[in-house]
Picture 1 (cartoon, rainbow, N blue to C red):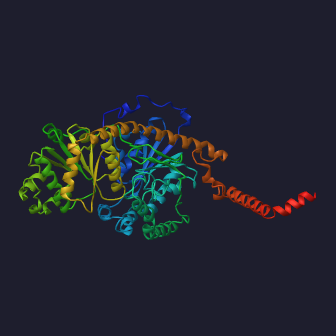
Picture 2 (spheres, rainbow, N blue to C red):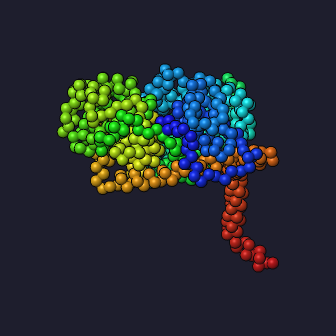
Picture 3 (cartoon, helix red, strand yellow):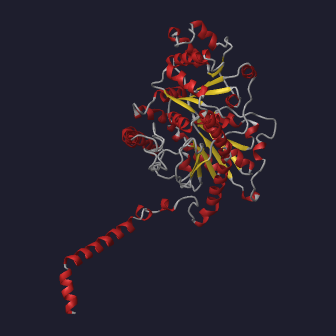
Length: 554
């Protein structure tokens, strides 16, 4: 996700053409936004909700790791009144290692490797918890809104201090709100979105996958418990089927598989800033000279290896030759561009396409070929918003998928970790593109899938892209609903806690014993009563002659 475009004044005012009705000024609350490890992509939806609340008159403050305060050092976020620092962020070396671990992880092979990068993020709990205690005591917020990575927020907020918490998730919360028609545990799905079209064996694998994940999960839970106890917190983070906080999901139905949700979980995405950087001069010039452009971006941290790049160049060369595309914009940092020098040019001989030499590769990467444009920073949303952009080749990160849907660009997804492979399935299911498997894709497969999307012989991709663009744009207004929910919960706790009332959005079963919530007592009583009636009926039938004589005698 790129940084919002800055304006001289009135940033984002177009968003508020119909501003919400404000309550009495004395009733305004103080909201603390919290973002830890994860980068600016994780900060954007939290900051955007905070910006809306600040416009409504609430006092909004921001807590983050050292060095990240620059995120709000712009007119766009000028309404944020104060910044609190929670300690150092990941070092560049730690961050690079984390993403190498993420990129090579595959839950189909090993859940131990899949969980390894999570330790890197979750180790911040200790310092986050210490700093947030101090910040909470100083700030005294009426509400905390945090990125889902910052688990420490739940230890300084409700129920420990009665400060309600909202957590922003990129997809439906892990382990919660499971339904029978989506097999497996939420967050551990890999190859099944729902049971509707899945084979029996695919559903069976999905249901058994938690057993495979159990050893790695148990090891992780023990590590978390030990870390928490060392900080004096003897209780573990609760594992619930429903949250005891407000879960705001930065996604929307149509991308996410629809399912029944408790009131404290709400799909409020895509949460996107209303302004974004325009095309810079070189990108604008490139667009002006091309009519069918493929945009390639794998985010800030994914580094494609030489074997991947060979397949990409081979597939793209075939598309150029067939006149399906006439330009490629590739967002690649210096490290990624250096990997191109490791390509074995002898392998770049696609069937029917021209031969690519070592010199060709060097010219391509250094922008000496008019059909290719490499840039370390691409104004992604501005590129996606251009009609010349006919395909987005992406890693399938949540922000990238939301932006492509919003701007109406079909996708080819190559996911590497966490929600990216699952987003690939969602892209296919919604009909806006195709996906590939990082462990098995070939240049032939890539060329064929690009060709299928670009040619769009039956028009289905184009229709579905238009359909999802309209859905995404309507759904994007729900960030105001996210702010509404925050206000609801904030006012509920602000006044309801004084009278001992429970959360108004919390379902009653969260406060009951299992016996009462699931009516086990009624079931047991009914079973005993039914068994008694059956028994009486049985013996009445067995001794009916005796009963008849007894009745005759009387």
